[in-house]
Image (cartoon, rainbow, N blue to C red):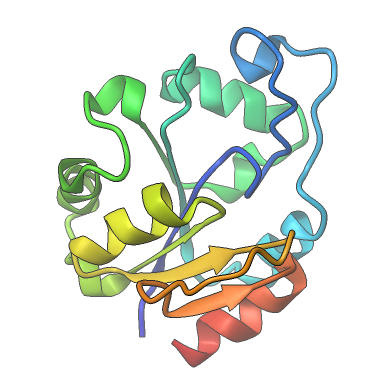
Length: 160
């Protein structure tokens, strides 16, 4: 069973309101509904952020997470800004795995963007969960599971 959970940031953990600048500078920030409860239920896992966050390095991501109290749930933050590669580039995911001193089979990537989050993670051997709150139609062959709400996440992870 995988013990490391990698979460995309925008529209998976926190709502991306598409405002200019890093999220921690925005006047309006919010959890994606159900995410905080899901993270509380997943307390036995190592949770990490794995994000492209175009305007934010890992410290800026942490500041954004802190605005809703989400920073305490994450042991590591991986931003493409710091890494030098963006999802879905396999080098992004390989970097994360190396820094965590694990192998891809121990990781589950959870994200809302099929191409960037799911396909990229799957190419490196991770399990994947597509967060699909708008119920977009597939197929999503690289997703090990598809959820429409974060309330489904803990039970879905237990099945993988």
